[in-house]
Length: 126
Image 1: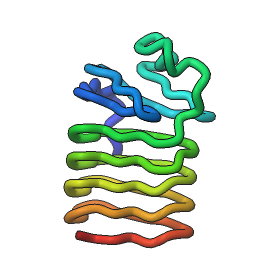
Image 2: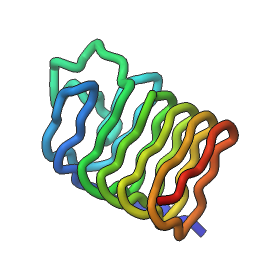
Image 3: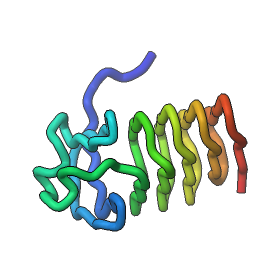
C-alpha cells in the first residue's frame, strides 16, 4: 500500500535548458512542458524560463519523486526512488530503489532494487 502523505524534497540545483535554479523545496511535477513546484509554475523561481518548453532536465542529487509528461532526457546525478515519464530517456547516475518508468525511451542506471520498465526502449544497467 502506497503512503499517501506528501513528502517535501529539496533539490540543491536543477538545470532546465541550461539555466540553474537553486534550492527548490517541495513536490516537482512537469505537465505539458511546464514545471510545477508545489502546484505553482516554476517561473515563480526564475522568470527567464517563463515561455520555454522543458526539454532536458538535470538534477544534482537524489530524487524522491519526479513525474514528467514529455522531455528529451532526465538526468539524475544521484539515486532515484520514483521517476515516471511518457516519453524521454532517463539517466540515473546512482541506484534505483523504487519504480522508474518511461513509455518511450531508454533507462540507464546502477543497481535496481525496485522496478524499471519501458515499452519502447532499452534498460541499461551499469
